[in-house]
Length: 472
Image 1 (cartoon, rainbow, N blue to C red):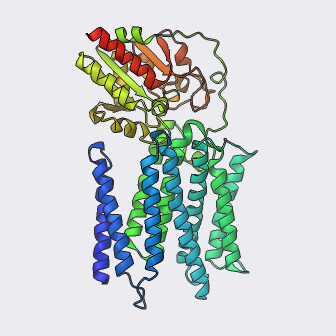
Image 2 (image 1 turned 60 degrees about the horizontal axis):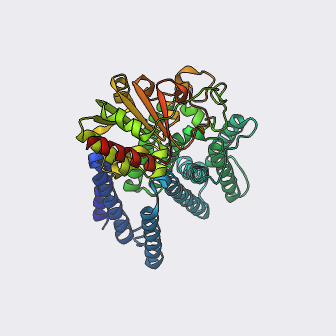
Image 3 (image 1 turned 180 degrees about the vertical axis):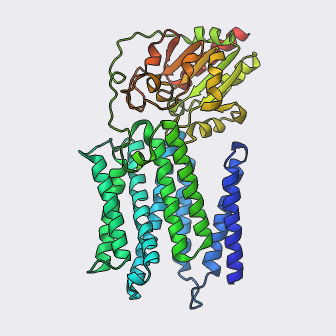
């Protein structure tokens, strides 16, 4: 039985690695996710029916186990089927938080078991520290994810305490000192009391860590919390000497960390600032946040149709407004009509467009937009100067020149899409309200820019109708 269990874990681990590799390209991402899911299912079934402890006792309580699996399966399926693309970041935060909670619960159970065995912590400091690290990181991931869910869903506002950075760093240092002291047996009294203290402090840190973060910084937080959950799961694998759990946790943790670093680079943010909760939420921009006093001009769908039909190259910049309007299919229809009339159309994807990493890629993939038309920032920026028309659909901060021109802006230094290099810039928004970062965009007042107000889906529908008239 143990040999078959080990083989199952090996197959599961390999499927995780293969699946993660396939996730690196849109063409294979769906199959990669399926392979990893199959590997996880195999690992779960093998554990339930093949695992035995050191005394040769197998798992029981099958009724509870399969009831939990059934309830989770039904809830997960219904949630995934009903969720809108605009709410996908909230779902990611919620699911990620559940993973962190599971890791924390594992640590609580194993710490209680360690106490009941009467083991002196100082004789097993590494094992004890591993349990407590799983508790701390899992709790921070859970609470942070719940706060992120509330903020993304509009239920929680940004809140910064006086000396927020000092408080966060102090809490983090206190957690680490307590962890070392407990693991080395340097504290007296009831160990469960100290575990509860760690749990409370971890909960508080998870809340304070995410609470001040807002605006365009949220994609970085989601990615970082995801890596936290992976690390916590890896500690669980170490505790149980479970290779497949360890492998899965390491892959999630490392992939999340790499993605976090990439997001930080895209936002021009420091990873250290993310950890201490010093990122953007309540910052205000100097000149950029106030009204520029500039004037803007509007364009009608009929005028834009003429402009696009006589263009050679058009680049579309999708943003959160496109997702809100659920206009991805209409946007793809516009692309196809322009292509049929000899216009080269591509999409410019900023790394942090939307509310989470890859949000726009998934949105457009849902509409069957060809992957080779999706260009990342480094690929597309050199092309803007040879572009006739840039159509910005619901994006704001990722095209804001203040990131390059205004040192007082909270997004200063963030790499942006250089849409202002194009011959004509058309910006579709519902109104002139600021974007997610809460600052005004000077791009809207430039001579080459025209505003196209309205719901993205409705506006694109009118634009398509006008183009069809011209084409006929």
